[in-house]
Amino acid sequence: MSVLEVTGLEVRYGDLTAVDGVALSLAEGETLAVLGANGAGKSTLLGALAGTHLPTSGRVLLDGEPVTRLPAHRRVRRGIALVPEGRRIFGSLTVEENLLMGRFPRRDGPWDLRAVYDMFPLVAEMKDRRGGVLSGGQQQAVAIGRALLANPRVLLLDEVSLGLAPTVVGQLYDAVRRITAAGTTALVVEQDLDQALRVADRVQCLLGGRTVLEAPATGLDRDIVADAYFGITGARARTPRRPEWTGSTQACRACCSVGSTPSWPAGCR
Ligand SMILES: Nc1ncnc2c1ncn2[C@@H]1O[C@H](COP(=O)(O)OP(=O)(O)OP(=O)(O)O)[C@@H](O)[C@H]1O
Image 1 (cartoon, rainbow, N blue to C red):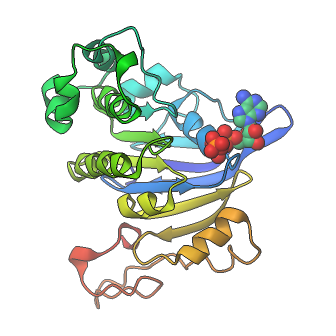
Image 2 (cartoon, rainbow, N blue to C red):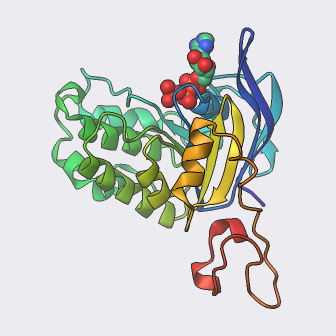
């Protein structure tokens, strides 16, 4: 069963349909990158999953249970935590105080302050400093740590790379990979295609609020993503067919042509 299952999601701002019939599905421990240009509807989609935007139609299921109309704080308790665009760190609070905000509300689970400090040693060194004096990368690490303290089943990350140097972004996504390797499921909204492909099992590209491309990240042709991203006609037609697990032969019949089970892309399950 999917950890997160979304069907027919629509979110409107007045007459504008910002998310238009989006469906997605995330298996346990899987990472999905949602890509798209400015205004494609990525942040609105995350908001609808986190509970900050109420959809006009569609369903959001977490572990098979509907959460579509639950307020954000109750979704956090169920296991959906958001790392918001722009980090939203409290500048006047210390790093540790910022992190502790993530414990209210929370689920039970392995993430506590010690585990977050082990994941981000630089954050541990700065735990008594005010959030406002940190660099952008340090603030992003604190924002991820704060979300982890809620012990999420699904971690939503909005534009981790925004305004940060590529090396810093790389380090942050290394941490995200370690987090997902430990079993947390992640949905990453990203404009940096290279980072997205590095961290994701699958990619879903939005344009004008609609899904125009879905594909496994492994071996994905960047031109196909670029076409979808910029809305060049034909991108949808070139979306790789959803892979199929053939069972007896252990061969993938569709786009990925991966030969053995251990390196099988998540989309083939
Ligand atoms: N509060 C709002 N009121 C009205 N329209 C909004 C609001 N927030 C976003 N929009 C519009 O909804 C559409 C989707 O915006 P959204 O921020 O979700 O896109 P995005 O892909 O996250 O873009 P960006 O990368 O720039 O954040 C855009 O047309 C945007 O102008």
